[in-house]
Amino acid sequence: DEVSGETTETWTAQTWSKAGRVLVGIAEVLRQAMIDHGHLDPHQVSLWVFDECHNAVRHHPFAHMLRKLHTVPEDKRGRILGLTASFDMRGDQANLVRKRKELESLMQATIQSPPDQEPPTKNYERVSYEPPPEALEDWVEAKIIEVLDQVPADLAELISDRKKVISSGKSVWRNLGVTPFLYYVRECIVLHMERFLRNIVMS
Image (tube, rainbow, N blue to C red):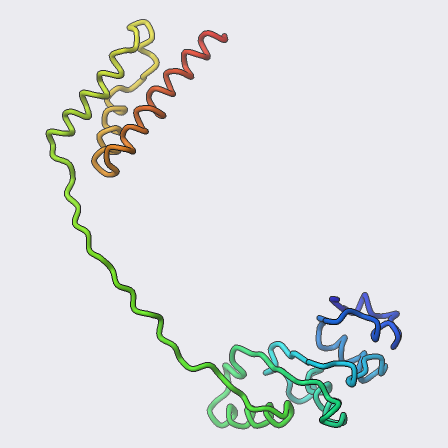
């Protein structure tokens, strides 16, 4: 269950005890439930997870909750896990050591960080590419013109710019190959003409 100040204002100790098996909430709401009202019984919690636990110092709600947990016998106290990306990004070296000791003492734990891992080296295969011979471009142009010439003279307006159509087709062939070129002819030229004719018939 997700708990917040709005949802827990009227909760009693019985409500807290019957809440879900996993509770997620902001630090201050949980601190109030545990310390101010005594509704959240530390004996009933098997695992505490403190996200951004580097904040658990001085008067932060995390720090108050951890001090409260210290009063619970160890055999009846839930396990404690603190998570943080970096426990201090701004402090100097002396403050880093002090804060680390403070956190470890308050959480009764040892800060652990994963070892540095280099990403696996990727092997790339070099592939040479040579554009099609210019003679084939002449063949491509001839094929496009062959398709365009099938358009009746009185429907020449179907293709408003023959040079642009030919140039685009040659570019597709040159950069992508024969299969995309055939797709261009079938889907871009022929399909365009079919749609134009259909609109004339339906109008």
